Every structure is written in C-alpha cells, then in structure tokens.
Length: 141
Image (cartoon, rainbow, N blue to C red; front, side):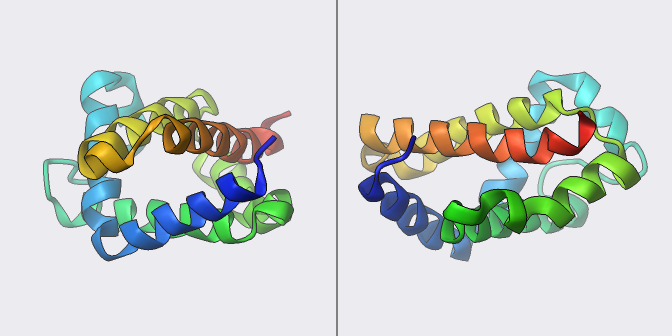
C-alpha cells in the first residue's frame, strides 16, 4: 500500500522524467533486451539498437504510461485497462516481461536520479511498478 507521500513522490518523479522520457524508456528497454535476450522476441520486426527511433519512441510511450498511471493511481486498473487489453490480446506479450522491465526501469532511474533515488523513492517506485505490472498482466488470467 502506498502512502499519500509516496503517491505524490511518484508523480513528482515521473513528471521530472517526462522531458527525458525517450532516454529513460529506451535505456530501460535496451537494458531488458540485453539482460533478458528472450524479451527481444516481441520486437524482432523493430530496430532495437541503442538510440534507434523505434526504441526511443516506445521508451517514451512507456514513461508516458507510467506518468499517467501515477497521476491516476487510485484508478490504476481502469486507467490501464486499454493498455492491458492491447498487450494481452493484440501484442500477446508474456506477462513476465512486465516484471523484467520494471526491474530495468528501477535500475535506469537509480542511474539517472543518483542521490535523489533514496530508499524511500526506491521503495515507492518498486511498489508502484509491481502494481503497474500486475494490472498489465490482469487480462492474462
């Protein structure tokens, strides 16, 4: 359960990351593809080389969705329902990948935020990303 302070902190972090959304998202994706090569399966038709247009574009979409979710955290399931359906029924992304990407996002944020990514921010973000991944995986049940 997120406290009201943690909820505010999440919105602040993602609003701060929005100007560099392409960099944050593409770095997290590239980290996931490098660390967990099987996740590339779903992106075989795209150029997923560092700083590619596809990676930057998709990375930005991810960060925008994370910000939208943080801004609407009390209605996260409803807010993410279209995204959940899209990933489950059209893209057919395996739900484990959401957890793997969440871990890579944490690492990317820690690198970019440095000392500002303190234990409180880390814990809040970890809780949020777990909830985000769980909502995205809901349609698979």
